[in-house]
Each structure stands twice: as structure tokens, then as C-alpha cells.
Image 1 (cartoon, helix red, strand yellow):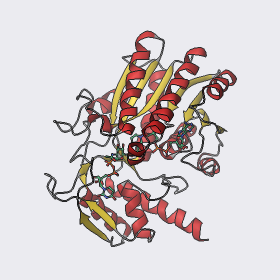
Image 2 (cartoon, rainbow, N blue to C red):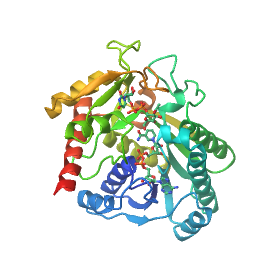
Image 3 (cartoon, protein in one colour):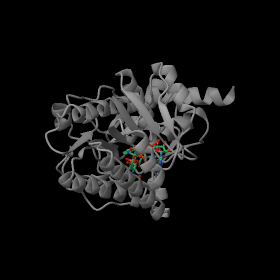
Image 4 (cartoon, rainbow, N blue to C red):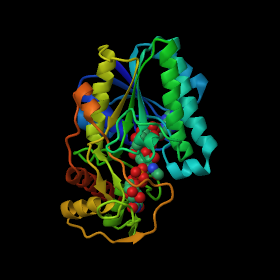
Length: 341
Ligand code: NAD
Ligand code: UD1
């Protein structure tokens, strides 16, 4: 059974490829390596014993995408990760984000239609909820106006998929991720942020290893128990496993709607200070941090209601915040060792 994983050399994609291969699926990756490294492929092979098929091209190129689908008309399902994802950059370069994230999706949907491929799993984000009025947030909570072009590409992509499902054979599962962190236990694959990380955990691990001098905690005057913002952090391997289940749900026609939406989180929120304390505990490193003003555009708190995903997918995130931090720390040390030897 051949599965196309777009963005499969990226952070979440590479972990998903591992889980798919370990369950016996044949994987073909398409990635333009705009935010990932070709070295991921031998490392996936080290973990699974299988080197995935790989093609490098831009999915926003409709001619190349159409040609790819003609050559691979035995693909049974697609997991579509490929997108740009830096919120701040999307504010600076909105057209680049709309162009890449939307054209790529549209080209894939044409390729699916022309080659009779019916199943797609799509990477969405809890960003579509903005600051929800009710917590934990359920899948039927209102989608609020996006705060960034990046967030808007996720909302528009969800609408493109929903509309296409209504009038074609397409079946889609939209997965709204909360905050994926951590790395594979082998420390062979993980997140590779380009330049200065925007996200909390890569910034923590880079500070601990000495690449960054100090972590800034953005705001301690939120209406939360310790004043810092709360998120639902989820281990990337738990997230990857949910993709295998979602794709199997489509392949086995177990989906109840042509277009289904699931939250992927743990259902538990952690504040920034709690994440820091957990990291210090599992790494034994005292982190240099200071409290600064809030980061513009940040919401106060969000965590998932996971009941629907737990019940319908038969999936539950298993790893806790300590395990997430420990794996992220092992990964940071592994890339540091590689760079210095
Ligand atoms: P990532 O940047 O590590 O992976 C994305 C991959 O897609 C990269 O390898 C990149 O080279 C590739 N890519 C981008 N544009 C492409 C194009 N036009 N053609 C071919 N390849 C292309 O990101 P990630 O963290 O693994 O995220 C995967 C998906 O999940 C993205 O859609 C992202 O928006 C979404 N998401 C991520 C998070 C998160 O915190 N990481 C949260 C919510 C949603
Ligand atoms: C951000 C994006 C979101 C995206 C997600 C995953 C914004 C507004 N949202 O989510 O759309 O889906 O990344 O890519 O950018 N923090 C610090 N110091 C730091 C970094 C972060 O205190 O150096 C805090 C933040 O203020 C936040 C928490 O840590 O409270 C998590 O931040 P981050 O990892 O950037 O994720 P989000 O902002 O939740």
C-alpha cells in the first residue's frame, strides 16, 4: 500500500514516515528541502531498515506535480505536511505563504482527482481556534479570524478541502495539531529549526546547550495560575501515530463523514514556567531565562478537548511533558555532538 507523504523530510513528516514504515506501508516522500535536510533519509533508514522513496520538487509547480501523479498512479492515500509554517515570516511575506501553502494543496487535489486518489490527511493547526471562549476546546468551536497569513492559509486550506469533499469522491481528515515538541527516542530525527527558533522548546534546548544566551519568557501577567501562557504540548511521536490511524481510517472506509476534523493534543495544558521546570528537572541543566513583555499575537491559553479523537480514532497521546523535554534534549545533544565532531 503506497502512501505519499508530502513534507516527509520535515519535522512531523519524518516521524510519521517512520511510523508508517514500521507498520509495513510503502512510503514515497515529496519534499523540496526548503526547510529540511536530505540526511533525514538515511536516518529514517537506520530506524526502520527501509529507505523511503524520495522525489525533490516544489509542489506549487503544477506541471511537476501533475507529472509526478501520472508516474505514481498507485498511490492510495496522501498525508500532506508540506507547507511554510513560520508565523512571523508569514506576516512579512504573505504572498509567499499564500502561494506555497495554497497552490501546493490545490495542485495535489487536482493530481488526486485526475488519478482517482480519494484519501487525504491534512496538517491543520489549533491556531484556527484563536483564543477560544471555552476550554478545553472542542472541534466544533468557532473558527476565529486568523491572526496571521500562516493561520489564514490553514483556515483557507480547510475550506478548500471541505468544499472539494462536497462535490467529488475526496475523503479528508483534517488534523488540528496543538503544540508538537520532542523527538524520536533514537535521537536520529527531530526538529531542525533554521536560524533563531521562534518556538519555545527549540529555544530552551538551544539555550541549554549554549547556542543562545538567554531564553525570554514572553509575559507573566496572563490570567493563568503562574501568569505565563498555557499550551497543550504533544510529543511528535504521539502525533505521528495519530496520522497512521487517520490514514488507515480512510483506507478502510471507516470514516463517518467525507470530511472529518480531529484535535490532536494531550488534553492537558502546561504554562511556560512549567515547561521550563520540567526541562530543568529532566536535563539537570539550570536554564538562563528572564521574563519580558508579552509577544504580540500570542493567545493566553489553549488546550484540547481530546474526547472525540480518543473515541473515534482509538488514539490517545501517551507521553508526558517530562518525556517530551527529555527527548528534545537528547536530540539537541545529538545534533550538537554531530556538529562538533
Ligand atoms: P517542517 O517545515 O519541518 O516540514 C515541512 C516540510 O515541507 C519541509 O521539509 C519543507 O522542506 C517541505 N515543503 C514546504 N513547502 C514545500 C513545497 N512547496 N514543496 C515541497 N516541499 C515543501 O514543518 P513541520 O513542523 O513538520 O510541519 C508540518 C505541517 O504541520 C505543516 O503544514 C505545518 O504548518 C503543520 N503544523 C505544524 C505545527 C508545528 O508546531 N510544527 C503545528 C501545527 C501545524
Ligand atoms: C506558534 C504559532 C502557531 C503554530 C505553532 C507551531 C504564534 C502566535 N503561533 O504557536 O500558529 O501553529 O507555533 O509552529 O506564533 N514562548 C516564550 N519564549 C520563547 C518562545 C515562546 O515564552 O522564546 C512562549 C510563547 O509566548 C507561548 C509558548 O511559549 O506562550 C509557546 O510558544 P511557541 O512554541 O512559539 O508556540 P505557539 O505560540 O503556541
